[in-house]
Length: 301
Image (cartoon, rainbow, N blue to C red; front, top):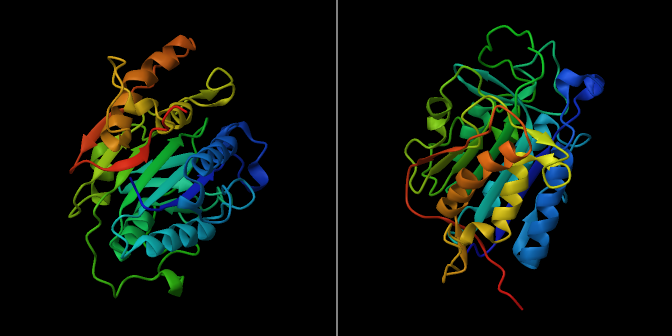
């Protein structure tokens, strides 16, 4: 069980002047991030540190703010081997052969690669400090294609290279003892291959894919209005993931990443099918290292 959980939670469903454009919107992203913060506050109390003070949503989740809060959380956990960083990022995503790009609230369609949080941004931030990190990326593809040229190195606004406080070019990569990445929406790409750099050279590392396809479904049928993956993520973290499929109570009362992944793998396809939606959303799991505890199942009173 982490001594202290450092949380960055972002749910982005509206994107600047294009907030009313159906191709660039997610109805439940912001509320999903807020629900995660509320639930973990209730479960952990003083053991939880929320960076940004609250969930980062449509008005606050700019690219630079996301990078700054993620960096602050990882830095705070460094040197504390019992602490854990949980980063939950829910938004639309673009995928290129060099990785995943997450749209921030200041996304600019005229410069899509330069105004998104790139996978290389996340790799650089996590390499700066030796901390245990669970990274959850729940992304969906835009409803219509975003025209974009191939991303070029060094073109991102407020990128690590342009923000002195975040520059890590002089810092040798450090081993990170635990990483979990959950990703949706990498159309036409091998998501395992794309995400492998997040884990190279690191121990106790997990990669969870929240969908084998390219969509992350949401709607009123999931938790009365949520993303399907987010709905079950919250349920699993609340303690359900610690109860095996047999229904027997796990004696240790701890929720590990493996248990959480197994819970999502069992439940998510059925949840989507029960909602009458197709194609079914089927998660996948890739294990890089040993067990990692992410929470505790509340004991009955």
